[in-house]
Length: 99
Image (cartoon, rainbow, N blue to C red; front, side, top):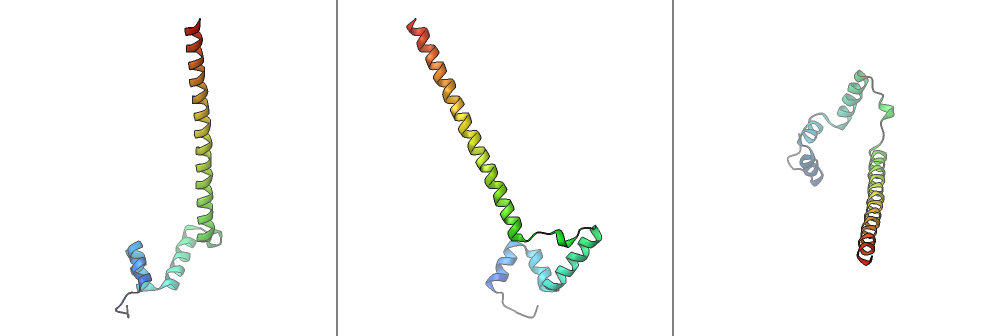
C-alpha cells in the first residue's frame, strides 16, 4: 500500500466489505480476476456464462416487481371476495329481520 491517504471511493469499498478492500489493495483487481477465473475453472464453471451486474440487477428488479404485482392482484381479489361475503351476510341478516 503505497498511498497513505484513502479516497472516498476506497472508504466506500471498505465500508461495504473490508475483506474485499484489503485483498484488492494487496493483489490488485487484475490478479483477483485471474484468481477468480482460475477458481471457477477448477469448479468446472465457465466464466462465459456469467451475467453482467447490470443484467443481474435488471432480472432481480423485474422478478421483484412481478412478485409485487402478483401480491397486489391477490390482495385485490381477497378484498373483493371479502366485500362480497360481507354484503351477502348483510343481505341475509336484513332478509331474516324483514321476514
